[in-house]
Image (cartoon, rainbow, N blue to C red; front, side, top):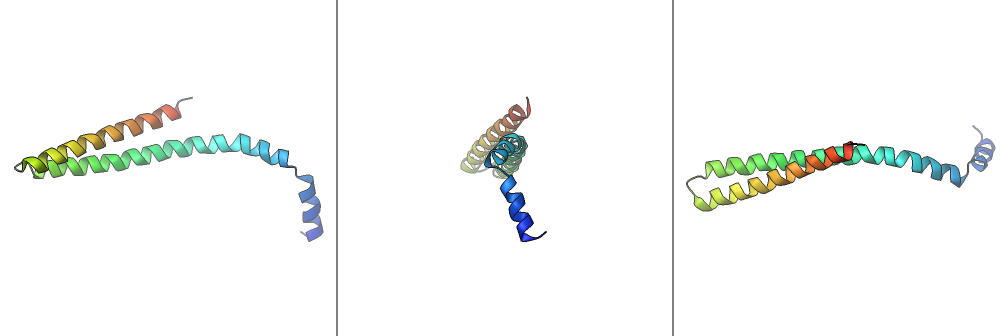
Length: 93
């Protein structure tokens, strides 16, 4: 395409067309992205929960290590469940 043709075509595009396109497309892209984001964060929290619970299991003779691992494991499980529930709530219409 020649530069003059590009300039002529650019004059035909209006800001209102771009705004309407963005209003139509952006919500349809953001919703799945938020769902995937919350699922990924839930997966990270699940991995951390497993790690802390294994840590508590290996330090069962040390009361402080056991209590700390168990507490952090439970907190990570809570965050994991809430993150997956939020992803599920977003995915419903």
